[in-house]
Image (cartoon, rainbow, N blue to C red; front, side, top):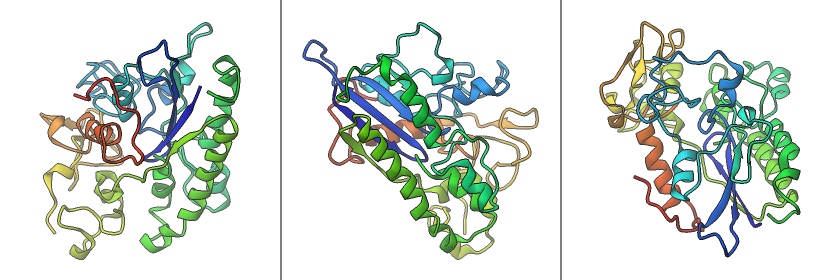
Length: 310
């Protein structure tokens, strides 16, 4: 089984196994590592569930589905494009569940750097200790059941944890440590049998409504022509506002999360980028997935998908 690894956005990595000649699909499995950008239910398993009337999941699933968006995530669109089922969350696996088509280890709030890093440096602790290294450990526990031989998005939360303490120049000093953590994860996965890897960059974080709210700069020169913060990637563009939120310039109030009684949901999430201040809408994720699967955001390209993302 040939393995393809894909690191995306904050802490996301996916690897695909090439199929046998008897299988017409380009890949037979997806194994994903990440944070809330690609978590399909792990954090939901360890936290109180969203109420049934929550706006999360409302666009596609029509109910909360363990995803921090109004619908599908990038990983969901990738799976659909390659004719695979949605990737099940590791913590939701049942005893006899078939995992030959993949497993999702992503956990909302996860970081590239280990939890102890933030404690040592006196920075706000992440929402979870399920960092990249922990997720790699989960993978190693199930690997014997999916591989008979060795053939076979990260960093956003790290940056956000430092926003209250550092300016853009100082944040850049954090990059080498994050790159080292990702590099170590790549080396580990190669040792486990991965042979194809892709490592794209992060979102333009200066366009995320939650980051815009946290920084709250009053200097016009800090923003570009789209209303995004320069350095992370004036008049504020409506498309940057969070669809689900409470108040403020970007419809984000950190004390009143999306789904609370005081929040409202925009009439058409497909017209905006930001969902709740920290995550994007299904419509935005679809465009990113199309750029990854159909080009031009991956070089060399992935295998041609049998299905178009629609």
